[in-house]
Length: 140
Image: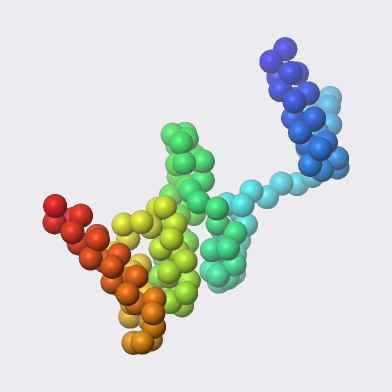
């Protein structure tokens, strides 16, 4: 009975968003192939398109989930994105990544951005301020 009630709710919501996505019954199944944004990010990273991956990335995958498979996926997506940006990213990509909640305390990202920023860039001051903040927090 609970599954049936949830399917009714799901059908109502999907019908408003995309009538072609309303689940079929007997057996229950979605008529469309779904690719979650985490899958899109991983596909972009495999193609070397880290800028597009960074645009698609909406943050940690199901951040409150403690399910082992979800935690593994979350860590994989996050670490591969970080590594791609560190390895091949421009200063702009690094700064954009630094804005993510998971990169709030990432010193290595900020140092890499600082190395790539032109000496007279007005963005340098913000990066230096972030590094000073992090140093103060670590020494406290």
